[in-house]
Length: 280
Image (tube, rainbow, N blue to C red):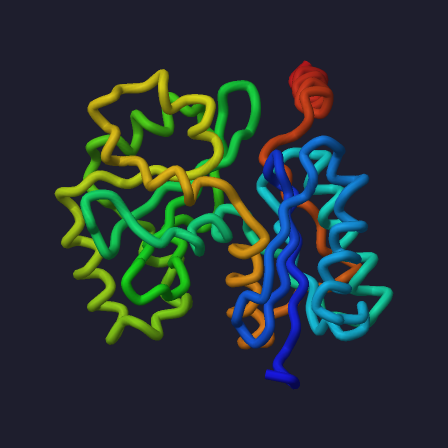
């Protein structure tokens, strides 16, 4: 694998960020950032140490992958800014990864021994809300998770559970027609697979559950994906990025931006005031 593409992956949307190295689709290593200091202080040194450990010079990196959100303001800004500077400095490609897809990419098992199902992933959006998106996950074949929503939506955590708990699986199939169907015979076969899960609940996953899980209905315990797969990591970012790399799907280093789960409180107030002025 000497000439295999090398990917540096960064994840800073979660409370504890991480860095990973990927070679030709295989994970080489993953490191967590120190929790005692902010990611702005630890990310660059961790990148330097991780590259040095495996004898990589910065110029050896073919692509920098970074979780672009949805997520919190500070962590996202640090991760995206670092990725852009690194990619620009060494002439590497850059790939922005949906943090929710990165989480879905790491799910290795579902409740009840199910090999496939719909998983609703949520990241904390502050003020009792979560940024959520659903994916079709097949653990047996370890293929790419398929998005069942065009993009994430922000909703209250209580509403998130109320909308999905005990409901039949309903997917927005139109938005996945052009996705990776390599492990399905054809689109119609996928539809039948998805509909076969109609009697089952949508499974829940993601770091937003840390604040809510013990306050909810204990009768829905089996709807939760194993806690080990809730947090976004650089490994998940790297897995998504490798599929994008193979497809030649890259972002522009100058225009890639963080995707915040919501506007800052001050921005929301400014919008509300502007709306009132315009209505007068």
